[in-house]
Every structure is written in C-alpha cells, then in structure tokens.
Image 1: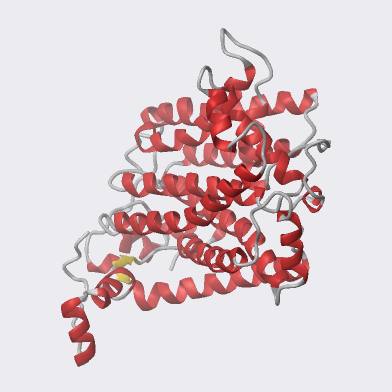
Image 2: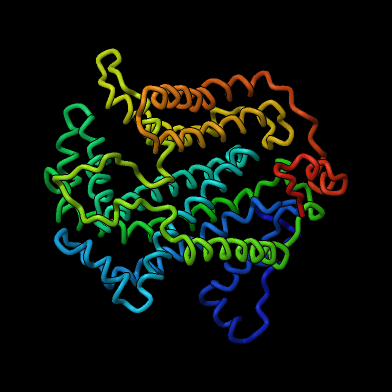
Length: 429
C-alpha cells in the first residue's frame, strides 16, 4: 500500500548512496521496517507475535544447523548420536534443548498469531493473500515439526512415524503405495530416517522464503488494527520505527525470559519420557501421542470410530484431520461479515471464545486414554469445530447485529472506544 505521507528514503552517506544505486537493499529495509512504513497507531501487544515468530524461526535454523553437524541419520546410531550431542559436544545439551523447546515456543507464538487474526478479522479483504500465505507457513511448520520429532529415534519417534505415515494407507487404491514411498520401505528404518532428516533440514529455509512472501503481501494493503477500520490519513498512523520496534523489543524481552525459564529449569516439560528409550519395533508404547501442538488435530482423528456409508472410520478420521486445517484456507470467503474486528461483533466474540475453549479441550482429549467418555467428548468437540466454520460463521455473517464502528483509527484512540473493548484488558498504544 502506498502512503503518500510516508517518509521517503534518501541516503546521505556516499557509501549508502553507492550501495542503494546499485542494490537498493537499504531502501528495502527502510521501507519494510523503518520510518518508510507507517502502521496504524492503535496496534496492541498481540501484534508482537509476528516478529516473535520470525525470531523463533531464526533460533530453530541456527541451532538446527549446528546440531546437524553432529547428528547421524542412521537407524543404528541416531539415538546414540543425540545422546552424544547432549553429553560430549560443547554446550550440546543447550543446543539440543533450545532446538526442541524452540519448536514449542514457535508454535505458541504462531497459534497466538493465528487467534489474533481470527479475533480481529485479519483474514478479510483486502488481506486474503496474507492469510493464505500464513496458512501455508503453518502447514510447512507442521510437516517440519513432525519430521524433526522422528529424528531422535526414541520410542515415541519411531511409533509416531509409524502411525502418522500410516494415515496415508487409509486412502483407497493409492494409499499403500504412498505409504511405502514416504517411508522408503514397509516400516520406518534407515530410508525413512534419511528422508525425514533431509526434509527437516530443508523446510525451515522454505518457511523463511514463505515468510518473506507473507510480509510482502502484508505491505500491499498494510497492517490490520484492533478496530478493523482502514487507514484514512497520516493522523491514523505512526512510523514502524521507532514506535513499534521499541514495542516489539519489549515483547521479545518477555519471550526470551519465558524461553530461558523453560530451557534452564524445565527443558523436558513439553516432551515425552518414552522418547528417552531407544526405538524398538518389537515393543509398542502403551499410549502413542504426538507432540502437544498436534493434539487437537489428533483428537479430531480419533473421534471417528465407526464406518459410515462405504467409507471406513480410519479414512473419515484422516479426512477430518486434514480438513480441519485446510478449512482455514476458505475462511476469508466463509465469513462474509463486513465488520472485521470482534470488538464490534458481540455475538461473534462469544463464539470465538467458545472455539478457543473447544480447541483447548480437544488438546486435552488428544493425549487422554481413548475411553468411551473421551471418544464421545472428542466427537462433540470435533463436531463443534466444523460447525463453527461451516454453519455458525455464515449465519452470523447474515444476521448478526454489529456495534457502530468509529469513523477513523484516530477517533477510536482519542475516545478510548477500542481500548475499553480490547480482550484481556490489553490497552492500545
């Protein structure tokens, strides 16, 4: 988006003039994160999480590159190579724990980023492409995290690979060939481990490229804001630097404190103890569960226990699990309400928080023993998840009575309307 009131880049030093005339990198950086990029003046701290996600990815790439120098992608010695990293490599324990817990922190900030987009309607026009690129990044993250979970080659790694790749065998006709092709054989072994290691190393760089496109797409319409009202003039914006670089810096400090507390005091809190047992194809763990950030989708998969029509239960579960994620691609066209922000959509706000609770419950059910009660609750929660997007949102778009919007962002800031309606009591800048 072109802002005529934005400060234009004009290099002053001879060296920067020479560089900018031949490679306009200084101008690009200035227009992307400097005074040349005006942003709405009322962004709250939920807008920090995009920057935090980029920082979390940087941690993963840096620690991953160093870990790859010492890891052996061989089924006979992979588990021991991880133990060697922990015990024999200088600061190897720190690198390994930073990488493992960094994945969890990455998902925490990305989930918060997604829910902020859902609450404030950041997926609506003209930001559909920003949202679609974000969903692509999320899918790439899930694939990368799954492959990384296999690499320690512990019990949960091996059986997780067996179960997750086994989903593809549910597909009619092509399922078994795809399953064999993914593993390079009929069961997880050297071929699968080498494939997963190669792709796990490659995909973070693909994610980084997708993030560049995500940010590029964002800079066309500009950032959304808590009111959902478009920018009307220079009174509605402030330069990204120094106002939001300072705000992002504060958020990054909080992020690093939380990360350090987990890293140094509870590094195995989010892991599974069975993964410290070497992989054994002859001993199935009593209860196979994925990492915590996959649990809501795993609960949706387990919710299908009976055949329906000519489709077996396993295929229904696989379709529902993948469909629950792919559904997000169509959200900009499912929710047709002209009002973006939930601050001015009181009925939608109730259903939004019900969805949040629903996903938290699904996460709990995903790691619970599959008793009759757990299965029944999983079915109810999975049903509500799909009903929220396919039934509730279209109906709300047509019948919801929304609150009057402010005339401009500056009016909202001056009158404090948005600040009073902000969730969690978070006030705007």
